[in-house]
Every structure is written in C-alpha cells, then in structure tokens.
Length: 414
Ligand SMILES: [Zn+2]
Image (cartoon, rainbow, N blue to C red; front, side, top):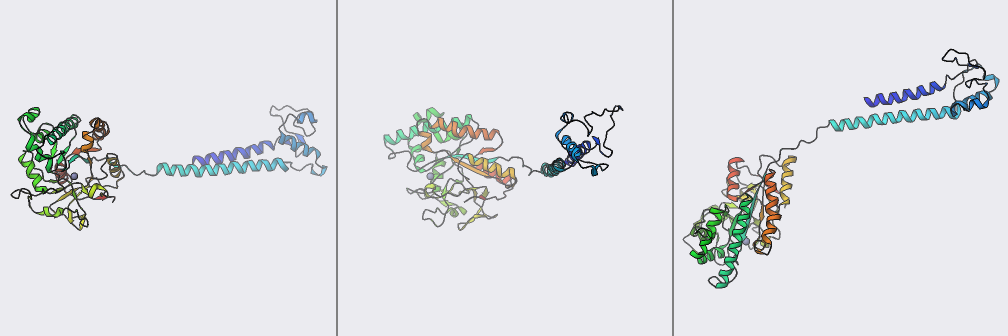
C-alpha cells in the first residue's frame, strides 16, 4: 500500500511538474502570466514570449525550447493554448511513464517482500539430545604375545596403564566410556592381576577399577574366535568381578555373509563354548557391523530386529534391542540434531550414535592427548550444549524403555 502511495505521489509530482511548466506563459493571449507579487511585468520580462534571446537563456531548456517554438510559430497559432510539445513534451511523458512503471514495480516488489516476511518460517523444534556411547573394543589378539609369557605380561601392563589414563580423562570430563574386551585380555587379567599389580588400583583388578572407581561400563566383545563365544567372554567378566552386562558388544549382522554371527541365538540363553557350564543371554545389540567394517550400515535409533532376514524391521514382541551406531563419528551428532530441529525426526524418537576409541589411538604416543582434544573435548561441548547425552548401551536401552516408551525408530541412510 505504501508503494502505491509512493508511486502515486511520484506520478502526481511528475504530472504536477508538467503542469508547472505549462502555465509559465499565458499563451492564450500571448501576454505574460501575472506576477505572483501582483506587479505588472515589463515587456522585457523573461517570461514574455517577446523576450529577447538573452532573457530566454535564463530559463530551463524545455521552457526555452517551447518559447522559441512559440516565437517562431506562425500567426495562425496565436490565440490557441500553447503547450510544451515536440521533443520536450515527449521527454516529459517518457519520464512520467518511467516513474509510474518504477512505482508499480516497487509496489509489487514490496508486496512480495511483505508476503515473504509475513510467511511463517518453518518453526524449529527445540533440540533434543542424541544418545551417544563412547566405547573401546579390545580384540582377541590383545595383549600381544603368547599368554603366560613375560612379553605378553609387559604388553598387558602397558595397555592396562593406558586404559586407566583414558578412564581418568573421561571421568574428568564427566563423560561415560564403555570398555568392551574380547577373551584374550580377560584371560590375561586372570593371569597377571596379582597383588603387586593390583596395588596400584586400590587392590582390585583393572576391570573393577575402571568400573567401580572410574565410572566406566564393562561389556563383553567377542568375534567368537579361538574357541570362545560371547557367553565365554561374559563368563570371564563374571569371574573377574565385572560381569552383569547383557550387551552383545558388536556382531556381524548380515545373514548372507559367512561371518554372520547369528544374533538371534540370543533369543534364549546360550551356553559357553570354552566354558560349557557357563550360560548367558545377551539382549542388547550394538555395532551392527560388516567384516573389517567395510560396509557398515549407517543407522540411528533403537529397535527390536524382527528376525535375521528382517533385521531392519521392528518387532514389538522382540526380546533383543539394537542400538544404531550412526556414522561412528562426532560430526554426525549434528546431523541428528538437525533432524530433530527440522521436525524430520520425531521428538518422541530416540536417536543414537556411538564412537569407537580405538586401542591403537589409546596406546600410540600422543594418542591420549589427541583423544582428549579431538574427542572428549568436543563431546563435552555437545553435552554442555544439550546436543548429546553420554551414556552406555545398557543405560541407553533403559532410557529408551522408560522415557521413550520403547518406541522403535530406525533412521537409516544405508
Ligand atoms: Zn572386534
């Protein structure tokens, strides 16, 4: 509306400008226009059509031109209203048309902008935290060397010291870390955690120290090689006083692969292979992996896989929950936060991610400092900003059941 007024005003002034040019000479009679002050102008008045050329020079070009035209006009034109015409008149009308067009254009542009300003922006949802698990897998080739040898003991003690250092860093940040060893590290612990070794950790073995004094979670991890299955690993943890977890700490999910681990065995308790009297039922799957992690799925959320051929479908009656690892990095947390904000992810959905702190990074020179600055610091910042909750797999699934009503959500990229 303002634009209409502006356009109208511009047009008015333009037209007014034209009319203000017109009355300068009262051409009807060939007489001079009355002086505003009521004085009778002399014949040499510059407004007179009889003015000498030097007087005309004082006027604007349009007026000069029209006067010259009038002066040169044939006598037959006398007595007729003389208006600016020819080039001058054309110019005025062009200006008027341009101004009018500009006004109309401005009106539509402003109207479009007003419409845009008034259009309700997609409301951003309040951010919800992504449930994040920081974990470490110790493979079944660790510690290096043959169990029982001095070299293996040295390797074990070196790793032990580094794990404690890491757990301290994690605790100092108020974060949470899940330690998931395979069978060899646990057999080494049973061998090497004597009184002398335990003296540095309050008289308890490293697993109990990590869990009870430094706040780490302890879960089994098993490639089910070397004659040990998941139940055997869970049993070793039990014997070390650090058992109780029902997390199946990583498995090959794809039934078409020869390495498929048959997660659905855990619908019922499974007996040990190395220790046949041991029995255990895992009910939380994490790290749905592929061999060497070459083609791991990218999925976030918690669900109960229906069966081995319908892994990505939720079965509300299923007794095994699966936690999506998402991209396995920290930047991916922001992707999930963005899904919440845009509303693409329902606030009633729990979105999840996990990050693997690799043993090679933990033990390499400068590795812990890099973890501190590159992982723990950024995660603490995300936690402080409400974007991430650092948890463990067991607590995560408990939260999913109690705070999210066990509602399955599978946000899968591949
Ligand atoms: Zn592994």
